[in-house]
Amino acid sequence: MTRTVDRSPTLREALDRLVDVAAAAGVADEVARAEGLSLAAAVAESAPGAAPAWAAVAGDGAGTRDFFDAAARGRRWRAAATATLSGLAAEGSPHAADYALALADVSSAACGLGEPTMRVIGNASVAAAAQLQAADVRPAADPATRHTGDVAARAEATGARDRSAEPAPARSLEDLLAELDALVGLSRVKREVHRQVALMRVEKLRAEAGLHSPTITRHLVFVGNPGTGKTTVARLVGGIYQALGLLTKGQLVEVDRSELVAGYLGQTAVKTAEVVSSAIGGVLFIDEAYSLTGDQYGEEAVDTLVKEMEDHRDDLVVIVAGYPAPMEAFIAANPGLASRFRTTITFEDYTDEELRQILTRLADGADYTLGPGCVDAFTALLGAVPRGSAFGNGRYARNVLEGAIGRHAWRLRDVATPTTEQLRLLLPEDLRDPGEDDATDTEPSAPDRTSETAGPQPGGTP
Image 1 (spheres, rainbow, N blue to C red):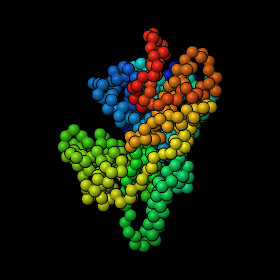
Image 2 (image 1 turned 180 degrees about the vertical axis):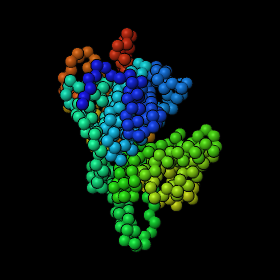
Image 3 (image 1 turned 60 degrees about the vertical axis):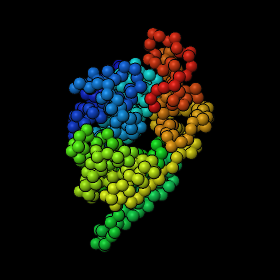
Image 4 (image 1 turned 135 degrees about the vertical axis):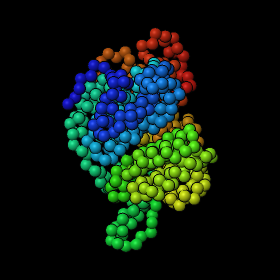
């Protein structure tokens, strides 16, 4: 059943809806609410005045620092499913589609925090699309449902509510490997994952036949520059291992140092153990894991992690990721890590052609069409951007699309009833380098527009 939408929900309303869906799915209220607040902060972090507006909804004495801490935690969810949605989708929960729709509402509602910028509009659209795709919910193309800022309403028109009544069937190993093989680039990564699958499959068959087998560690090290697909592959690894019968759930829990380390010695062990507990049955993905070295707090987290890996070795996979050289030093610094992480998979930077494919796929996933000349405009951007270790790779393509979506919305600001084609079509002038924001990057109804002809200015948060 679809619902009639006269306006986009407020963040408070969207969070209440998220909590209701979470309760039906057996997810704790506080977990869903915290996740929704982090996603909203990540979407709206570049908007002037967003922090106090967000804090007023968050309550419990939340302030500006809490807003930016939440944004840092939620930034990864602008491109991929949240932790809870990942778990629901992995276990085939009948509530996964509803939860994705509620997260899309949260993304939409974040546009109402502070003075929304074009960057925020782009963030919201791409984030909503990422959540909907994770639960296999497709936006509808009917222009009557393409209410600006209400992605969830468009998705509901596809009948997602009706589909969510039945549990999703478990994905087969063949389907998951086919999805891996369909990823852009990553030929070395694909070969290594296929090799790991063959090893694990034979080890499992030998054990079932009563034969002795060498212990093959399932834990992995992913090395490569930012935006090279490490999280995407980690999520697939969880599903693949679950399909092989090596994990019971296959969900992905992605964390960094801030989510493992507490403010006092002794608390870090508890915090790390809680994070590991949430990942049992699936994959714990630790990004920039080398940040856990160099102080006693990080060492406490690593020591706890090693113990938890041993205690749950039959139903937990840990993947640590980061730049190549620091990751090598990180693994070598702790004998417990060195004995458990014996397989390293290298993620190479994408070529220009691969980045063009990524941009096109991201646009399709967000229900946009790249018009004539857009690919050439993106190629020109790629030719001008420095390609050092800090280059964003696929993340750069996503940031370009987020900015383009915002400029597209600004371009249509005076079109009372845009056609479906206009609502979908991106033009070359919509594409710019993510570090080059428009002087018009303000709320369309803002009274002061004297700077609209001032030209591009640096700034903005990708």
